Amino acid sequence: MTASLDIEEIRRALQTRDVLAFYQWPTKRSGRDLESRACPQRPDHSRRALVITPANGRWYCHACGFGGDLFTFIGQVENIDFPETLARAAEIAGVVESSMSDEERAAKHAQWRHEREEQERRDAEEIRLRNQQAVPRATAYWESLERTNARGAEYLGERHLSTLDSVRFDPRHGGAPALALYSSRGEIRNVVARRVPELGEPKTPGLYACPSAGTLIDAVTDIRPGRDVIVTEGVIDTITARIAWPDAVILRAHGWANLPLIATVAAPVIANARTKLTLVPHQDQRGFQGALEAAEIAIGAGLSARRGSLTIVKHGAKDLNEAWSAGWRPE
Ligand SMILES: [Zn+2]
Image (tube, rainbow, N blue to C red; front, side, top):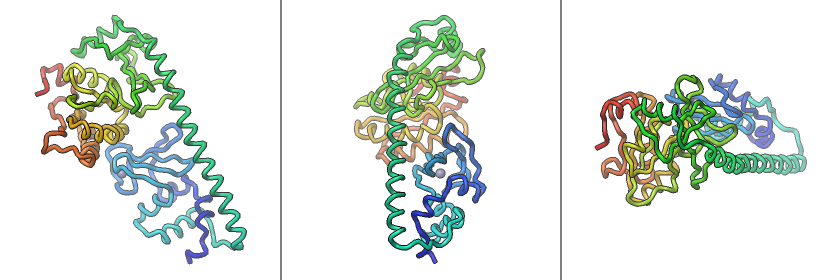
């Protein structure tokens, strides 16, 4: 009897951790979110494509390109319709048939909806503020970096690379080559360094509490007719790409999860500018999987491998820098 199950009451009682525990869902913590290789559509993504925010139950699969709330999560995991989903959610949340009068129920609904809207507004405001505060901080940090550094330049030389205008050096990480991370509006919102190898992990630290979503070295706002776009992985590969394709716009995802995001933002701009997208993944299964996911999004935006506006580069080496060092050059 779903009619007497109160949807607002269930929504309020339903906790992310109870839903995940019910399905014994494998997750890993990532800041305030949880990540998983399993999403409601596919149990076996090659990467942790699913991100869930426990505080509000919102989830998104970056590989599949969709998400929702805990109701849609349950519905998709079990492949059941909404009344069945509601019954299952009630079971998970421990909610039984409601004995409230219609008036009580209406009053409660209005109050809960108000509270939920307030919470969503506060969450959005917090993210907006955090991203806004990151811009002056990251810009000042970028301005403080060195234009030249003996160890940094030597390290680039070890990777068969040279010093470039778009690369600076971070003395706090042993002279590490560093790149600016741009928002889709072209603002600097983070700085990512490739630490010199003798310092060990972490290899590519960013700034604390600055967003990792964005593009390294160039910005989506740099895309214009006549400039091809290269999307790479890794700081060193990005610097390599800048040297290998000197006239192209180079966009690098900071972290694999941002690759489909970049494709989502950049592909329509590329299609509109009638230019070309070249994906340069690491030449392993994970790299190609990420490139295929990004390619699907690009095709959805109107790019086409057949018409030559979409290419995935296969150079045969482990990564672009290794290929470059061995003498590989783009066609
Ligand atoms: Zn998925």
